[in-house]
Image (cartoon, rainbow, N blue to C red):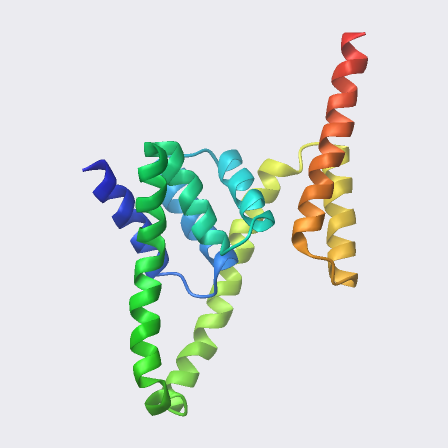
Amino acid sequence: MDYLRLFLVFAKIGGFTFGGGLAMLPILQREIAEKRAWVTQEQLMDYYAIGQCTPGIIAVNVATFVGHQRKGIFGGVIATLGVVTPSVIIISLIAAFISNFQDVLLVRWAFDGIRPAVVALVINAALKIVKKSLVDAWTVAMFAVVLVLSTLTNVSPAVFVLAAGVCGILLKGGNRHAAAA
């Protein structure tokens, strides 16, 4: 039953999210952190950060991490299958009929409406993360530096996440050693 629930929750996430991994963040927050408390907001942020640094789709990586945490290796596989199954079905159907609908004005209008809604949901999720993540002067400074650099350069997000992790180790770990001395 737990495996079925794991599959169905991630199938729901995979089936009702448009726009990829970042767009899934609000639904992931609501479904697995807030509603079910399978992970904390902090754990979800950690999984999301690791998911950006590892190969593959962020949502698949997060599903794998959460499933593994809940039910081991098989749980990771089940959660991963859950999140990708709706996409595989939907994309297969779209591929079969795309040439018939790509120029339909109603379809284009629907996607014109979906895009701003996804942006609003992503901003909402980001604001929730900001409240939990920017807790002191150094985290605010790190945020500002990464925001500016990621806006002005084409550096991979993985580089920023890894560099921020190293900075966290150096700054926080250095403070711990200084406090212990």
